[in-house]
Length: 116
Image (cartoon, rainbow, N blue to C red):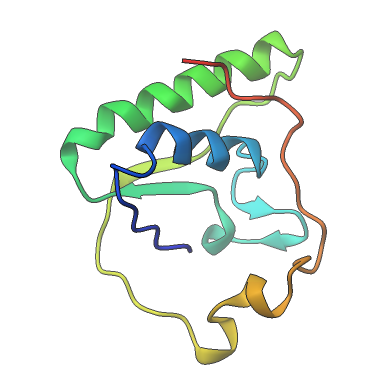
């Protein structure tokens, strides 16, 4: 999980959602690449209930973009209110800083998020 804290005067929730959708495959259900299980699912947990509609609209827009690109898999990203947040073990902190290429070359679907 990545806890994203941002300044809306610098970037928008919409910009963050574009990055989110384009940089992973949200159609894999309970997995990402070789990692399988519920802890590897695509998810967005929002803190501000006012953001729920924005997040849900972005999911619908990306699903439409996938369909237009000929991809039939459904987006399985979970959208729910945020619960308690706990830091991972020290070894997993700043993982991509320590391993800039990750470990399995995960990427997006190749489908761009539609312009708003």
